[in-house]
Length: 110
Length: 278
Image (cartoon, each protein chain N blue to C red):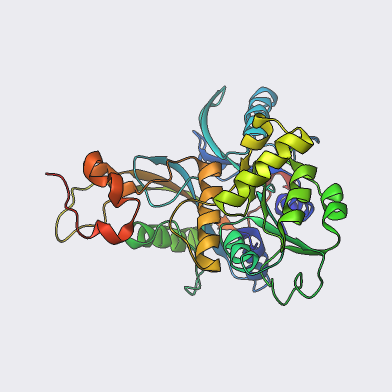
């Protein structure tokens, strides 16, 4: 089995800054479980999924931002809109996704 | 290269349980994203920039998460203000041990890997237990069943499926593992055959009903599986059911009147003819 840490080890060799998104809290019906991860790649070679759709697009945007600023962010994905014909991508819950720069810096060593 | 990430990778390579702790929210923005690595049997690495008592509280929560093998997000009151912390539990994937490397083992090994299990395949025939036949398995063991099972490192996250070429081997393997601390034992066989085997085990090997009740045999959920790949789906579905909890029934049942659904979920072919309740 290949874990996200194996994938990151490969990507780190390219030397590009990355972002890692992790689902850290869920309420109600959501597409992924706590602990689900996604790697956001600066050229779009993302890996994994935090559920797809608009929510994931928000996470990718946040990831690009994190790659540029180097600062982590907590993103709330709200999927509680009413179901309409135009908008059926609503699972009914809320997901919190932590997006952090990768590789991380060890501040303790400074 | 981050010292913490290097330590996590070392633990993962050794299959050692390890927790990565990350600060999600803090009054001091600079603390957000700070990390710490916690193990069950050695001192943690990193400090999150917290004082000793707060650090100790975090280590305690992380240790509890490791023991429960569940990721956790929690709030913590510290002198510096409220913190929100995420504990990611790593290094202990569940193990799927497939005893017998035949035609059900192949799709089952693939699915196990897909579902993030560490997959181990065992058979005493090298032409069956081979890397070529099981490219996604983490380990392929060629050895006599009793020998390999005696050496195998079982734990409460180990799921064993007995699908050897002959029922004699399944039963021998079953007798060897029936009292081990395991998450799941599944054994293949028809209803009739299993009934006979259980009867024999009770009479000749003095196995109790409690011991036999641990065994999922015939193996798998009743989804009408027929081909090896379908049977592998039924087995994997049962393993997921045992691991995650669930009912094993169609989720859509909730929209249907029970009386109408009783026979429809026995046979998908009849489902098209029934109507949802109003």
